[in-house]
Length: 401
Image (cartoon, helix red, strand yellow):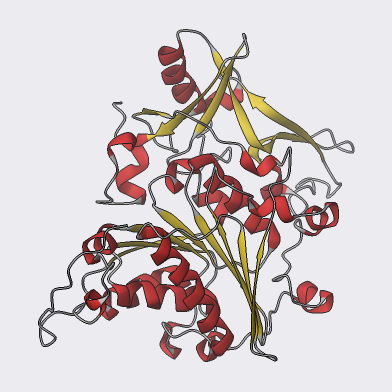
């Protein structure tokens, strides 16, 4: 790589003058970067702080939780008065205060409800600051489907790890998983180092010092990637604070790993997740020239039947949002039997249901299949301004509606 001639800036007026003394540094590239940070806990706070200090132009913060007083010892962006407020919203506000050059957007809610490939493909890179394997699997598949690099961080009291995944090259997160890991991924359990009893309690023993070290490594790997000095795909960096050792391993790609699936070309239709299934399939059918059905990536409960009193209720929601708490009959209290589907057509009650209620996230994509087995992916372009107002897109994302 050819390195530029360093020009000394004005240290009194230029916020980035010191960093631009680095021969290969490109502040304009950082200012144009679009990143998504998933998780705004201790680790996410440190990643976000570093990104803001660097002058990263566009940052989206995704988190489902609210600020608790116990977060204050490990999260630099939160204050006591923030207790009860969504972490994503508070973090986005503080980033803009920390550096007015930064544009930050909050995405408050569950990963699977908010983020689809349609959202993820609008970013140059994603940071995983998560506390459970199930969310990491979901994020890994989203990034693979969108072809977007992601940098995963995990930590414990005095230990931490950073892994860089660059689809479609090299191994992905799931390449490192065994059968038992998939079973545990269904639990909201903690980072890889944490004992089982701590995982089941849902509380992770972390310190601000370990979080700052791991986050620094994550952001540094991203800086290398952004400047064409990409780390090796699948590289694992282990930090052991008790012995002050840093180890690096390279994982191998696993043959047949489900985490490498990519959607390919995605067309856009001018509808939003609030549109009915009938309207979305009508738009898709017009593009395809033949009828199609919706392929759900999550099992959908279309209805609930009570074996005791015979009551039937239309539901049309993802199974994981209904069971187990919503299975009791509202009339007699008996456990109802769910009708489950993964393929939905526009006829009947399902046609009048919003695709967002069926589990399709804002921006989608909506995956459809024709009777001949032809599959296509459509992005819900009508969600763009509502989810990411003013967000810049690449030319490849500007598909005509």
